[in-house]
Structure formats: structure tokens, C-alpha cells
Image 1: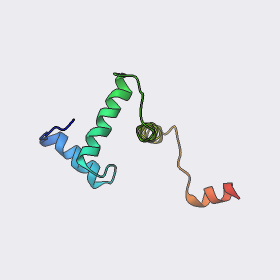
Image 2: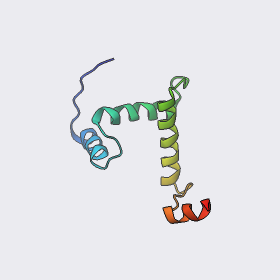
Image 3: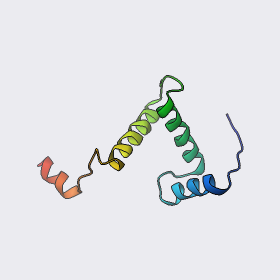
Image 4: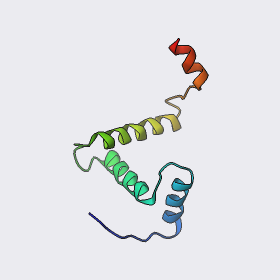
Length: 84
């Protein structure tokens, strides 16, 4: 499906900031991510997702856990120590 949308104000600022901070590469990707999060939150359709979409969904959940303080990111030096 192809659509053309125009965003202004608050929504436009959010999308632009997501691109600027590298959270997403494009505005279209920001919108796709938002739609996936809508489905994640409200369970609108069953998730028969492609592998890429499953990976993105998992990354979103992990990111939310990190932001909530339920998950921790270790520095590379600690990872190298653990893998030895």
C-alpha cells in the first residue's frame, strides 16, 4: 500500500527527532515502527510476522526493558571478559 501523508507540529517533531538520533533511518521507517508498536500494545492482529519484523519487534521490547531499567547493557570490555 502506498500513501502520502503530511505531519506537522508535535508528530512531525517526533519523527524528525527519531531520524536525527538514528533510531530509524527514514520517516517511513518511523511510521512502520509506530504501527508495529500499536499492534504490540493493542494486539490488533495476530503476529504472523516475517523474520525481519520479528527481529524488530524483539528489539523494541528489549529497548523498552532497558529504558524501564529491567535490562542492562554491558560494556564491550565486560563482554570480552565473559567470553574468554
